[in-house]
Each structure stands twice: as C-alpha cells, then as structure tokens.
Amino acid sequence: MEESVVSVRGFRKCYGATVAVRELSFDVKRGEIFALLGPNGSGKTSTLESLEGLRHPDGGELSVAGIDPSRQPRKLARLIGVQLQTSALPPAMTVDEAMRFFAGYHRVAARQGLVEKLGLGEKRSVQYAKLSVGQQRRLALAIAVCHEPRVLFLDEPTAGLDVQSRVDLHAMIRELREGGTTVILATHDMAEAEKLADRAGILLRGELAAIGTPRQLTASGARRTRISVSTENGRLLAEDVAISGAELRRRDEGYAVYFSENPGKAVAAILAWLEQAGDALVDLRVERPTLEERFLEITSASAVKGEQR
Amino acid sequence: MNAFLHHFSYDFKTGIRDRSRLLMFYLFPLVFFFLVGGLMGSVNPSFVPTMVPAMVIFAVMCAALLTLPNVLVGARESGVFRSYRINGVPAASILAIPVLGTLVHMAIVGAIVAVAGTRIYGATAPTAIPGFLAGAVLVYAAYAGLGALIGVAAGSGTSAILIAQVLYIPSIILGGLMVPLSILPGALQRIALILPASHGMRVMTSLGGIGAGAGVPWASIAALGSGAVLSFVLAALLFQWDTRASQPGGARMALALLALVPYAAAALAG
Image (tube, rainbow over the protein chains, first blue to last red):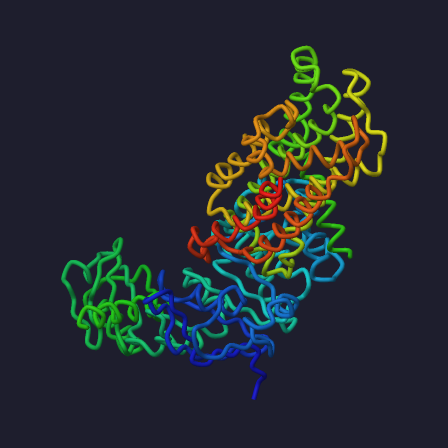
C-alpha cells in the first residue's frame, strides 16, 4: 500500500448557512499528481485553502504530511509549497529579493537556479509590479518550490501563461513528481488535468462526484468514441448515411461525426459503405471521450438533478 | 535571523523605492519643515525654541499615522499577507518590521531637522541628547502603535485614511506643535492632552533639555508608554491575514478605541 500524504476525511466547510463542502473524503499518495476539478463554487478552493491551513474546517479531519493544517500552520508552511490563485507580493519587491526573502523564512538558501529555470533570469532586479502576469505566476511557483516541499498546491497554475510557459511548467511539475513531491492542483483546464494528473477528483456542489485516473473517469461515462470522417465526394454527409452501431450526431467542417460504443465495428462499417458507394476516404479520426466531455456530462447530469430537487 | 534581516532590509529599501512612502517619509515633512521654519519664526517667535521636537513629531505623524496604516491595509487587500502566511512569515514580523524600518527613516529625518533647525533657523538645540532621543523613540512608538492598530482594524484604505486624519489634524492644531499648549484655553488644553502629540512635546522638550525645565513629565511618559504597549497589543489581537475573514468592522473599531484610554486618563488627570 502506497503512503498517503494528504488525507481528507468527512471534511465539511460552511460559510454562514451555506454549506460549501460536505462530507468530502479522499487520499493523495506520495509522488502523485492529483487534480481537483469542478465548476466555480464547487468547493475546490475551500478544500485547497483548508488543506493549506488558510481556513478552518467545520468538520472532519484533514492531514497533510502528517500534520493537521489548522493546528500547526507554521510547521505546515515548511512542508508545503503553495501557488495561490489570488495572492500577490509587495509591488516594489524584486525577483531576487523575493527569492531571498521567502527562502529566509523557509530557512533554506535561496536557489537562484530556479529563477533561471523558470525563465526569470533576466528579470532578477525587476520589481514584482513590473512583471507580466505570467512572470508573476512563475515567480510564485519558484517561491512555492524554493524549499523543496513535500506537498505542492497549485491553484490554476497555468492561468495567464503562454503556450511555451505552459509546456515548461508542465515539465517542471512532472520533474517535481519524479523527485517525490506530491502535487495537488485545482484547474479549470481539463486538457491540463488529463495530461498531467495521475488521478483526478470532480467536485460538484461540495461533494465528490467522481474520482479516479483520467482514463477511469472518461471510461466511466457514456463510453462513446467519436469517429470523424471526411470523404472525397462527401456522400456520408449528403445522404445522412446510417451506420450500424453508430449514431450520426454532427457535421463539423466537412466531417461526418459518428458516436459509437463499438468503434472497431463502426469504422469497418463506414469503410465498407464508402467502398460500396464509390467514395474515397480523405481523413478518418477516432477519438476516445476526453476528460472535458466526461466533466461536462457529470456537471450537466448534476444540474438536471439540482433542478429536479 | 536571516529571514528577519532580509525582511528588514527589503522594508527599509522600500521606504525609498516606493514613491508614496518616499513622499510621506521625507519629501512632505522636510518641505513642510523648511517652509514653516522660515515663516513661523517671524510670525510666531515662540515656535522657534520648540521647532526641533515639533517638526520631529510632525514627521513621525506623517510616517506612522498617515503612511503605516495604508501600507498594512494595502498589503492585506492585495493578498500580500496571504503569500506571507503560506510561506511561514509570522504576523509579528509583518507588524514589527515596517515599524522598525520606519523608525530608521525617522531617525534620518530627525537628524536633518535637528541640524537644519538649529543651524538655519536658530532653533534651540537639545542639550540632553540621550533624553531627547529617548523621548523621540517614545513618541514614535506611541504613533507607530496607533498606525499599526489603524492598519489592522480599518476595513479599507479609505477608512484608514479617515481614521488617521481624525488624530492627525487635531494633533497639528492642538498638539503644541505650532503654538505652545500653555496658551490654549483650559478646556482646550484638556482636550489636547488626549492627543499623543501634546504628551510628546512635553516629553521631548523636558527630557531633551529644551527651554526651562518643569521637571520630568511622568504622566506624559506613562501615557505614551502605556498607549504604545496597548496599541501594539490590540494590533496583534486584531491582526487578520485576509480581508475576506473580516469580523464586523464596528466591533473591531470599538476594541481599537481602547488604545486611547491612557491618553484620556492623562487628560483627566491634567
């Protein structure tokens, strides 16, 4: 059994009469990248901030690296790294000063190599207020990992980053995982979660609606594979051809898009029909359901339930 | 220690690097001093002997009362305190370091005022330097305590400015900075003693050996000392990391007002 570094048991968080999170339970193992997904107001930030020691839970038990976050916040700060979604540094603080400042409080030497690694080498003497949003987020990440934390919390880590910075950041997160750091990230970017996370939990109205590896989560849905077909004469589209075991749902930019639970059979049937009809295949794409589609499926089912209540 | 030094060094540098702090720590009080020094000397000769303590207190009020609260409120509102909290920066450092950093800036301003006041305007120089410095530090502690308290208790930057002005403006008019407290009517003198500036003038002139000695003003020393301690204790109690976690503002302000009790007691005692 792998070691559980983060443990959430029956966690409950209320704001006045509003229950933001109810009876939430999950574990995150050492060296795992765990994504917390959910729409706005689903309880992601309340959960993360309670694990980070920024909020007090109203019920249940939380443990991060063996520490109760609300009871030992100072000790916790040495074991975790946090990149908050909404936070800031003093506007006049330079990149170098920030690294020295926070390394000092973490009782470690400032790792200037990190600054280079995160593409801030030329910005060492630039004040925080003069950095771009992406540079500010990279600096926040450098500070979060400067003391080699056991658990790293990232809230929307790639928001505001360009494509290259995003790729670099993903590489760095994977590198941290290889080094044994446990990463918990909250994100709206499903593609990011699918690419990075070992496991993901989907929160809806403060409850865990689904949990598992991205593959498990997508497989647990309608399991309908998308088959997009483009042909020379476009006869599939023109004739609304029915294919056994597949449902023609959409026409996207010259493609006939079928959904099927048995993609092998459906593709074979499409190819056979095209041959018989004298049309030639130009492009064929077979895509399994994405995490985003599964997420939307879960959230819309929840919305229907909510309306029925 | 390393963390404290980095924090202190950063905070001190910010006092010069940040334009609004540079304005309120140096430019405004020094320009005011040079203007008032020239004008008041001819209009009101009684101002000249006490010019040095009066202008030091004025500079202290600009820094501690008008600037420090905004530094704290601004950092809390923008999320800087949240960044500090998750990185293990203690609340005590957040309150203490700006207070200590500002004290160093005030020492520089005070030295300029003392040298320029005596050389250019013929102000009376303190004859007991250690006593004068002790008095200045006490006055600074009293105002810095109030500034820190306003910074943690005020719900926004706007309310911090308004609250600070409630102390600042009467201190300028009634605090004995421009005209001696003794020429005010009796009732106004009592009211003036609610202001730390009035006690500050008594303490700095007396301990600094400026003018005729009227004995050690123990009541004023006690008011400033206990006022400073009470303000810092209340600031520590009311400190909050996050604007979102605000308790009702009225209750917080009511508690903060307790910091004025030592001054009110001194005013009642006369």
